[in-house]
Length: 310
Image (cartoon, rainbow, N blue to C red; front, top):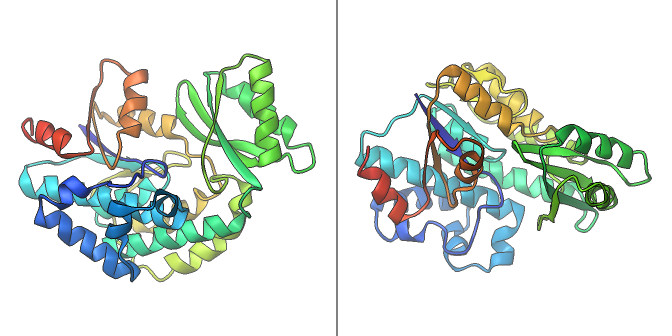
């Protein structure tokens, strides 16, 4: 069984998708639909930058989704590519609901643009922070987050359980700083501050829930044609009734990607394919599961290589 994966924010870069765009009409059409849905030229921003504008959450999110779906549309049109189960990391969950035909692409592009805008506005720039901690001591990091949260403006929580040896913490700058300091002092693992504009997947994003509910209420969701594993509790979504709730829940709750992968394997998935601007998820999986069939398509070279094996 094949598990189709879509990456989230952080994989954007100037020039993303241009090699596909210059080569295939179906990719040009996908990018054109995104431009129309947003009312501005997203593709020009993706190809020409500047990087700081592309990195803004409200632009990065629709850009990543557009490249991901463009690659999916391309390989579906050129090969017999198929999948059995899908999931996306955070923002990538929207891509998963597009490919199972629960969510129209244009609606998804607009929704994640607004999602990014609301997230950026929820916490003034400079007040929030995120950091990666390279460790398998997840329980201890959780304890440090609770300890930091007892301090004034020290709120912090784990935002992403990304791999066996990686978690992301998110919250106020002071809280993330404390957890990072203590983790270093205890030699828990390497700490890497993240260059992000807001603290995602934590309670500081609470105002975004109500705003996104209004956006999602206007969307006509359909029953997924294939199973989607959602981020927060690894539920297998087979009905449209739960989709909106899960997309809202993941705004403030951790992305439990390690559990998502475990669920996919329990279902019977033994082949993994990532589509998007960069091979973020595939790289994490390869570190955790060396003998599992893991592939990715991020550019023309990897596309042509994978196409030859489909």
